[in-house]
Structures are given as C-alpha cells and as structure tokens.
Image (cartoon, rainbow, N blue to C red; front, side, top):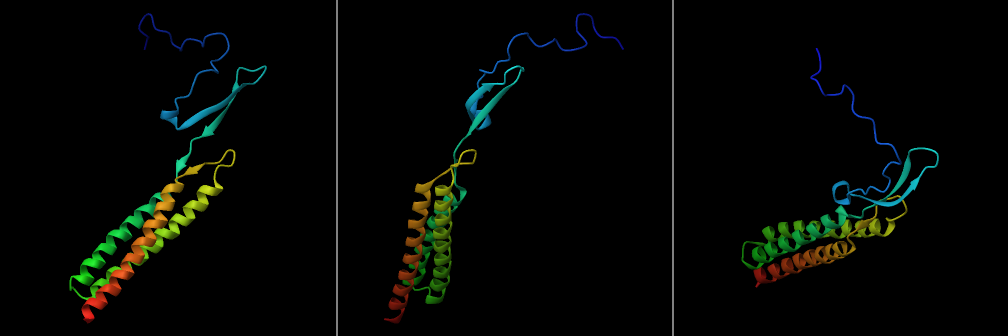
Length: 159
C-alpha cells in the first residue's frame, strides 16, 4: 500500500535548541504545582521538583458528618421521648445517637492528629482542622442531647 503524496512516513524531527524547561504545568488539571526546575548540565533533560497540594482530611469530613447525624438523631429522641411513643423507642434512638456521637468524636480526634503530623517534605499535607473541631463539638452535643432527652422522656412518662 502506498502513502498519499505529500505526507511523511515519520513525524518531523523535534526542533533544535534547548527544551522548554520553563513551560508551566497547569496545577488545576494535574493537581501538582511546580516548586523548582533545574537543568541537568550536559544533557537535554531537566529535573522538576513538585509541591504536593494540600488535601482536606476525609476523617475530618466524616467526623463532622457523623456529628451532624448525631444531632439529627437527638431530635428524634426528643420527639419520641416527650411525644409519648415510649421510652423503649427513645432508648433505641438514644443508643444510635450516642454511637454516632462517639464515632464522630473519635474520627475527629484521629483527624486532628493526622493533620498535626502531616506536612513533612515530600509528603501529603492535610487540612481541615476546623472541620475536625466542629465534628468534636457536634458529636459530643448530639450524644449529650440524646442522653438528656432520654432522661426527660423517662421523667415525662413517669409523671
């Protein structure tokens, strides 16, 4: 089979001169940022040192989500405990609220330790300390409100 006239069988040779070491990397597309570029003498190569972009801690996000869930479950405990549905139903939701609140506090404390220990050169740097703090607050508030609502439900049922 023959090639059509005017096309080359091989790609054209690269242009002569130094390679474009100064070409920037698009950080939004790759997730990496160029920190430093050095030309390796006597060769046509260069060395690029990349900066690792900080990442929001997934544990901090999960802790905050579980804390908000614990607060929402505590609202159910209030509704069932005071509304007259029974202390057993309120007790079941209290157990769920306390477990979600405890999980939120645990995940958030681990996230704060992960964030504090990250950031060494060449390693991933985590952010989200405020999310972890909010997860601790929401988780403990949800568990506390659930327990108080259960006690209030027993008092209302007993009177």
